[in-house]
Image 1 (spheres, rainbow, N blue to C red):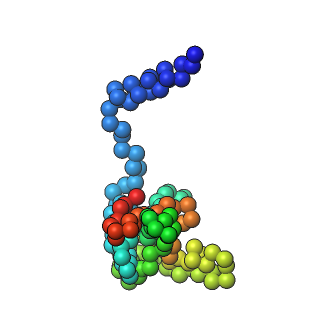
Image 2: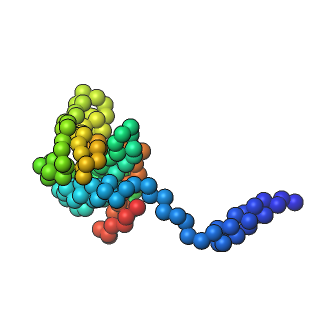
Length: 159
């Protein structure tokens, strides 16, 4: 007779008595404000878009990569297809967010098979006296899931 239900019952009981989970977001408030400010600079050409980001400490600075997430189509012949969202991005306002800009580049590798994933704006700068690296990607990283789902009736769901 299997007793595999005993550990599961024990874990469920522990979760019930433990209370709410602590907030695991270790980002300082200033980096969250920067991410919000940069997210405002994306403007989709059609439909809607949802900004995604990757944020981590690298060396002595925070590294932030931002992009518009793909849209997953639901229903019909295109069910499950993922579409990138075309957008414009206000580079001048991005520049203006920082106290000091050390480097500011557009990187493009048009001869590669993954040319879209190899095109981004990159900068190193200081935001409120904190060193940061920022990348604005033209498409989401391949490991990123969809940001939105579009239903056949035209409605949208966030993911």
